[in-house]
Length: 161
Ligand SMILES: [Zn+2]
Image (cartoon, rainbow, N blue to C red; front, side):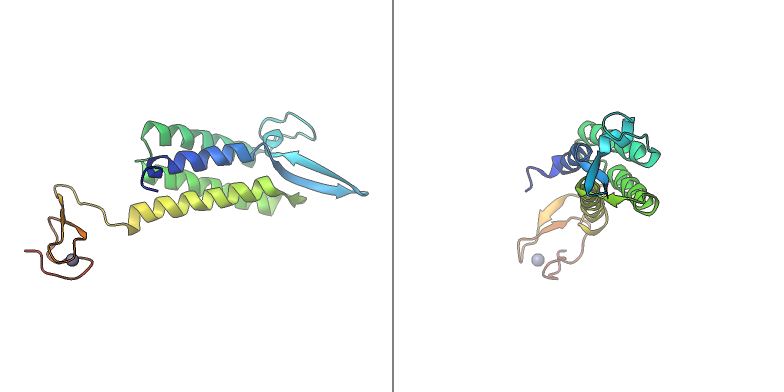
């Protein structure tokens, strides 16, 4: 798990882009069903293609996220969180706006964007981070990782200095 963490956002942005090649929306008309790929709604190419701005934005935000997560090696978590949020927001717009049935590609992108938001929000806000100018040490009592500016161990409560 620790080894894949720097690539997790890259993988999720990549999975979102791959999901555009799956049926994104579709309808059953007179017993015959049509599936529209996500990519057809981005570029207006392919069967039943129609340029649709929200999918276009989601696609290019995902490419931006993919590039940013590679360039910053997954360390720019705030930007990845914001881009995941933008993708989720436009998916909600799609869900409200599209009158025909949404298909597996839409739901995959929804799940992956929620994973991006959840993972990056957790890393940013909930996980203990070493404040600037501090070093990590081990609690002499329980062995948990603590920071040099802390007075008490966050795991066992032992006094550290
Ligand atoms: Zn401790």
